Length: 225
Image 1 (cartoon, rainbow, N blue to C red):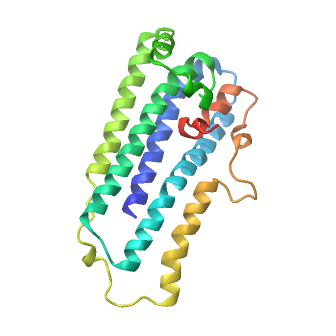
Image 2 (image 1 turned 30 degrees about the vertical axis):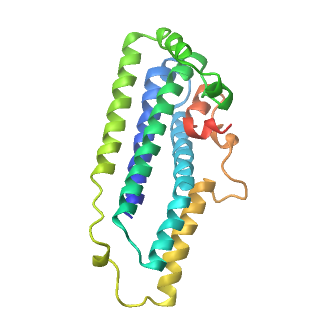
């Protein structure tokens, strides 16, 4: 549950990244777009962000399941969980930062091809095309959100596992719920939908405006496209 709450906090931070993208880059070019479409883009964005963490929780689910079955809870695993989320959050922040400058120039998210051809000179040229205050605001926001995420990770207190591990064997129903419920939630998050087809690009198309649709996506999801 502690790792789950941490992930939810990071999803909120990703929404703040999207909000800053909107006000710094999208808003002035989409004044004619109805507010309902902007709101739909943010809602769709939550689904894409949740999808990312659904995939990130897949290896954690099996690790925790193995630990529960073997009753092995070495402190090194707690360090691993913190390190795992620190690296993940750092990558999300870096990719969101790089993607912002590309979006501001082209009105769309970076894809795999753009990441492969990216180099510092491209970044400098994109940054020079923006107003200085736009650049500095997003730099400050990125540093602030990364710091907040890192502080949350660092403040995680797992305590002694024996305090929460019951000596009584759980009932069949309880055991099934503890195994199946997290798995179902992770699978639903990784799919991003309860529909037959998993979350895809068409789910971001909530407007006739390309920038509004692209805003619903996130840098991590687009890296694979």
